[in-house]
Length: 505
Image: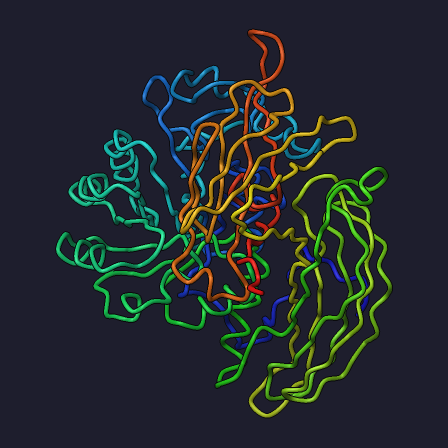
């Protein structure tokens, strides 16, 4: 029970024990922590892990054909430049959509819509497709392509635009409206317009008074990765979710099936690792530290389990003191384990994992089995919302990168951000996240603080960044400077920091 591997999901697939959906689990842009997002290799990884299907984005290129790409621009996930609408199919398919992720994926092309639908030709059970449509003009082409199948795959065509949802419905497509969180106006819309699914982009988006009401359609949650959020979502009767953590989500679905009853929670709890950049960055990078803390391991099952724990390094250089084990936990037993870890990286993302392999012997009505659980050791930066202007130093994500900074100042119920030092970037534009929502602005931006901000002891999730161009005319690259993780929004970029109300007194 040593040498745990987070890329090797260990299921509890003993004879007679199944764990299929619903709730369905789909790979958000494939398996984007293991392979470049929205590529065929990423989709294959997700399906090989055992997921029920894949989520992907469709955008229209210059000729109007559908291309699988998450962003409106090419820079982040390809070696191209500019907007996808400015390029034709031939040019787009010659781009490298894998080298940005890792050397092993150099040459991986952008997929055409037809390439992804080829998964549906499998003689086995065809995977489900969640298609996020960014350009409404693609809907007739999607309808025609799906109609060409003798047995069309299970598809949900999703959009944030109500007009696109109506058009997709009228074309005979199973349609989903996407929103940040459940609200009454949307509940009436999907009921009156006969929209077949509704998806929230917040892990807690169903956790309000409207979410508890009866809905006339399927209920989904998009982009659920955190262990507690996965457990909450899979425990509350949703129809499906998308995730960038396939094996974690599958293990959590198995946990919900096996460990029923009140008081059941996710079996491991990893601490947060506070980060103070610039202290030890010369050798290890701005996103580094030295932490002495503890973690919790619980047995959520009504039978005894053996548990082996370790820390798994995803990215960066870390030194970890070995955890005790293997352990034997009685039903419901919780242990607190000391944890010492030091090191880090230059950039957010790829936080270490606290991993635990549970296994158990057969018992009355129960076969032997094993499950692999993990939880991220999140590196997090914090700041107070203050009436006085304060400097937010952007991370230096390489040894020679120039200093850059923004200022933040609280004004009543708003947080005002301004670019102070662009670090040499031209025409910087601000991006920010606060409380799970994302904003864009020019060189100054006002963010509304949550209504309960001052009453909260935990504050709110927060990050700010700006991006601009550098280099010679005709070959200028787009550069992002950020204060913490969580930007760009999506997996692999770390988690946002926290902004806290200034303590009184």
